[in-house]
Image (tube, rainbow, N blue to C red; front, top):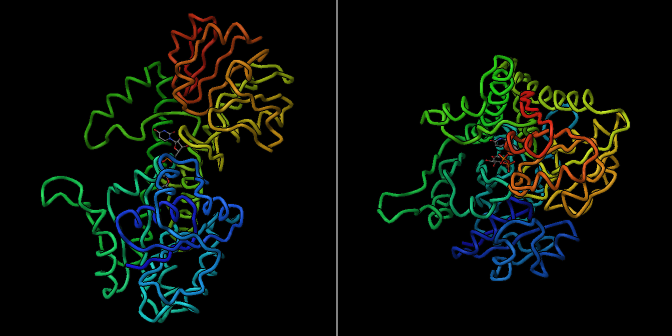
Length: 426
Ligand code: UGA
């Protein structure tokens, strides 16, 4: 099948590479000239595992515009849908792509919208600019840091649109659906309406974010009532209906998806006159979680303190700092006059004025620090030599915002340990 993918971000680039690897003929349009130049040099712009290798071994063509869109059997739209100030998704890039497709694609071409778009967007495109094409909502569920692996081994494929498009979508995904040795072992494909497919994406992210907010509440409550949060969460994880995933407490969830998608989902509900109270509470809890950590640090350090911040990325395994709780915390601390020196294994520098310095290792970032704050769950931080760390710090406060440091080890090294939910150990 001849595919044109519009957008070479996490979703577009990994889709393009995976579909090319299983035999489709793929062209990928990227309008950012810097990213385009890198892709043409076969350099990975995402810093994602295996993307560089696959780029070098692929026949995907990267272009700035597509003069022969009419050759495509199918178009995949994977452009950005950033958050507007009011919480709604900015659809400028989706609409621009739709105009481009309406102008260049053949009648009846299937257009799969892989970007996360508000419910009703595909219907609007179908009855508007793309009335001569077949518009299918086809959300992507990959995680950053595992983008390619998740694309090659999806947990499910969700698609919805006009019935005539179904066979094309099934043909597109057929090579990615076989997963085991048994003939029946296929990745499920849920074929539904475009509105249901659109909502399914927001529902999944909204639910995971809510689960994390609940977990953070349990960790906080465990501290209040004198229980051990780790044991409580472990006990919850062993219930197969709850499961072990997304049960790690911390200073809150972030990234380019959860904050944007939860707010867009809340805005969608509000527009429909529906009060989504659980989701509103999850968002509020997440803000409170970060504020609670900021207050703890402010309370326990002088106003001109130096903070050694371990972690800048929104989660481990990525260099992405979009909506990073680590950066949000640094900004709050910098606003109060504290100096923040940081280290992150994946980040060498940041133009953010909240960060005074990015150091190449944890010990340098924490030298003369009044407090050490672990803000990203990098495994390297769990394995730190805490005695060596305490040797270089001025103060003895260690705030573990990701619950990855063993409190007993911290105390043995001479730290006052403060963890998730105010968990303390002196
Ligand atoms: C998320 C979803 O997991 C993907 O399924 C979805 O496709 C993607 O958004 C998207 O919409 O494109 P991602 O943003 O890569 O993926 O991040 P996650 O790995 O889900 O982590 C989100 C946040 O939750 C991070 O800040 C992470 O540190 C935090 N988290 C995660 C916890 O605090 N505890 C946990 O146990 C797990």
